Amino acid sequence: MSDLKFPEHQPDSTVRRRLLRAGTAIGAWIIVRPAMAASEDLASAVRAYTGGAAALPGKVKLDVATLVDNGNTVPVTITVDSAMSAADHVTRIALFNEKNPQRDMIRFTLGPRAGKAEVSSRMRLATSQKLVAIAQTSDGRFWSDSIDVIVTLAACIEGDV
Amino acid sequence: MASTVINVPAKARRGEVMEIRTLIRHPMETGFRPGADGRIQPRDIIQRFSCHYNGEQVFGAELFSAVAANPYIAFYTLATESGTLSFHWEGDHGFTQTETVKITVID
Image (cartoon, each protein chain N blue to C red):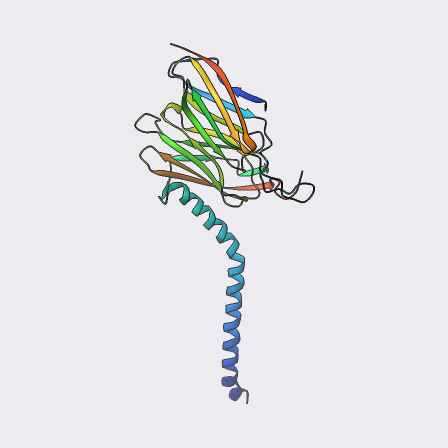
């Protein structure tokens, strides 16, 4: 009897299996979605800055502590490997983040008179996230560097101190 | 007038790369935080910073809410001739401040 029932059961279980699979897929999509949105946001902010041009890895060095104790003031240094001559220099440097309320952090304008392509400042980080530094050289090309930082005490975005 | 700290070498040799460090007292209210009454506090940040060396701009920055309170900005410039370095900050609610520092360049 059980042998006879088996074929009848099969469509049911296939349907169930399909439903389960679909359910898992939707669940996974819901979980993955915010993370995807954040990195999509970051990519589009970078694209807006470069005017759609691709940023090549290299030349730029983003220096931040990978383990941040206090997100309210995070020292950041960006160095670009450049001769800083009239013919070959860095014109712009910008810093972007993945999960603060706003993607832009700071933008610098430099010129051959800088002598050295290095800038430092202090940032706020709302949570553990990825930071991206972009530099444009006088030939119009863009360079990038990124770093993942872990923040233990987040910068205050919810409520007064 | 917000207080500032500007660190520039008083004397430099011509062609020397000088490090310039600046700090200005400013809350840099992000515009994302609710205050004690639960309402979002209006944004109050410095938006622009620039450094002019004898009238010519040598460095500029555009600041966003992610910049920490009391913005610190450090950069480099070539010592070309004696004169003045002028630093200018500009922000929300008509905030502006200019500071000048004299520099002597020796051969």
